[in-house]
View 1 (spheres, chains in turn green, blue):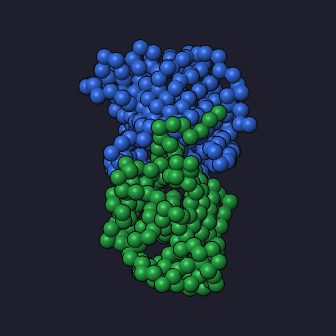
View 2: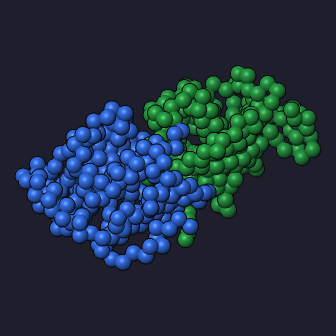
View 3: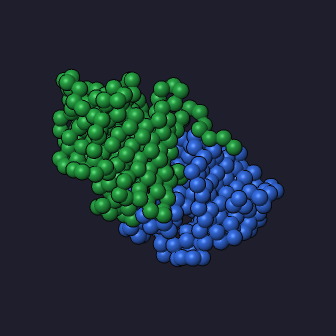
Length: 199
Length: 213
């Protein structure tokens, strides 16, 4: 799938080179969220609260405050659904959202070992994480934070995540797209101290 | 997700969110008098303009999420609900159309196109004109008061609704019976509270406020 990647020869500790954009110690993160599934588009606010480097609570509410879902990604590799609006509570939908959100927050779950790879052309370091029948490739920036994340199946690409930073080097926005599902998620960080919108 | 249902509950939120006082309330002595006064106020209210502050309280967070904006109502059924901070979001209901707009796009629905929208519209206008207080078929309604406010608690009978919305509390200012606040309480105790401030009644509101473009 990636002809230009080769093993770097450097040892890689468990996730030691991949830093989540959602850090413990930050009270919470708010993201303006737009979800497009086929021809339907929904919007709302994603709230992410990190409790540890591998423990997160993620709540999605409408702009007007109505809770849509509330899920917890635990340190022990479990996902607990605390609430899900009935109209959204379909197994396939929730499984996909859990997968995408888990990737976005860099939740390791039950993922396997990491391998450090190097791009032969650019020399950039790429971390590969093997999951059951999937792999995740992390393309990192100079601070070790993910610029791009790609989840693949055995032979095909599945989900692509792009992370954009702002001038302060903090998260600006995230774009999640699927290769074989018409599902796109676009999230933009909300600055609570200053309005992110203008007339 | 079912669009109609999703939008319906968005709108439920528009209508049902005030509260703010920790003052002690006692049951209203004369409910009929309150209803009659509310009905009179509703009849004489041609327009409302107000700022609002929305507070989302989630037990999982140590801080509340605060958003702010402007609310406009003009008789008969024109509503503009506009969030300006910290995100931008707009809902307009006018001429049997429901319009929503955020930073990434907009949507328009014909309220008459399905029953869900009709119910939603009925709920919204019912809250504004007080007709909702006659709906004892869908809600158990309790009336309380203190020297400054009336406090009406609506408890849905439907178990389906209760999974999302356990109670709706509406707080009326006793002096002019305008809505001071709405609080929507979810099953687990999380809630959304909206306080209406800087209220101006019966002022001229340009019709353009309810245009979709």
